[in-house]
Length: 85
Image (cartoon, rainbow, N blue to C red; front, side, top):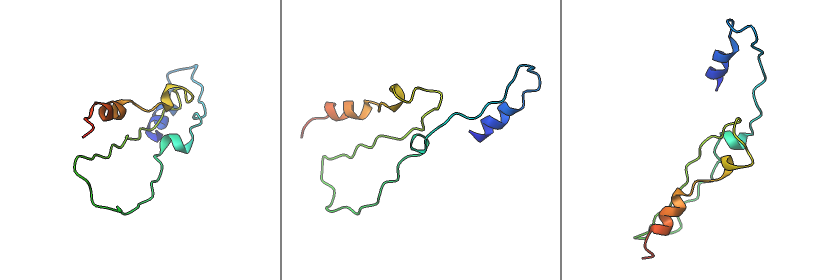
């Protein structure tokens, strides 16, 4: 984001350009949470998968209270389509 800010700060050709402050962005929306390392308590079982939803940094230009915070349904759909056995 710093590269973008430096590129947008210099706009000499635009006489109406007004520099603005960066939009507020909470740390939780730009960095993934730190997960504690816990050693496995048992060996992996057959026919078992750990589904991990990837973290994507949120945009301060999106609406924080709506679709931006809604996780995707991709892993839920995958889990629902997987046979029980």
